[in-house]
Length: 382
Image (cartoon, rainbow, N blue to C red):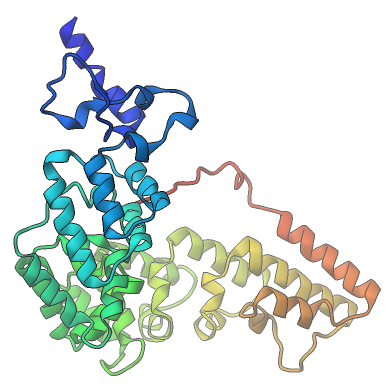
């Protein structure tokens, strides 16, 4: 019976993780020296109103957060989000709060950090934290607040090994013409660029064939996307474009050089948008190279409704407001700008008919679109 009772502990622990900081009561078969299994009576309560984390949490942890500058509401959010703040590690909590304090972090920043990395306050940091901070400051030499933004965006920066990960990545990009300050700016668009970057001969050959020079504005984006992507994935996406009539050189030197983010689009999205652009809109394949926005816009919310409006205008002999407007330029507009230029500029009856067509196209969805499962990521997958 004792073994059976102990086996229930993980289930109870997983069912109500926010309240594991409570010290008001504990199971009789668990040692009091193990605070991670210390529960209050409200910890297993089914009443949501009983989930008052700040009142049942470890007082030392809550006091440390309040003293650091968090509001009671932020403390409640933090303790709900964290899986554990055991009392024996309260010194570690103080040390991490002190590190964040040197970066200029405040309560809202800590909340964002723990949303992305719930175990930030529970896991120990390596002893070379000073070297790590010194390196990270070289990525943002002229803007200390940018370092805080990068840490909030990816708290794992404070845990990476300096020699094996941080310096290796910086040297990798410096060898191909991207200095450390530029690498720091890339952290905001690619938070995983430091641990996931790799460049072999095959990837370097792709970078060469794209044809961008190191001083070009898009060079750093093209290199970073190739560096964090698997070579097999890149090849499959290039082959996907080749199915629609583009050669490999056109994909690299024309499309990717103009729009590096095309490498980040899924094969399924490329197939759906390219099929609609070439098959329904009857545009030449070069139109996609000249206007890569056709690849990234949403098919159901932008591409289809706006093309239907354009085709209706052609059928009834109406023209949009503006002589230079085309079906391609319509895809670049914001929605309100598009409505003013293509729908609301016409007479009342025509505008009403066009608006009904636009709304009906916006309501329609792909088959089974509403039944797709939505995956919510609350933290980084590493």
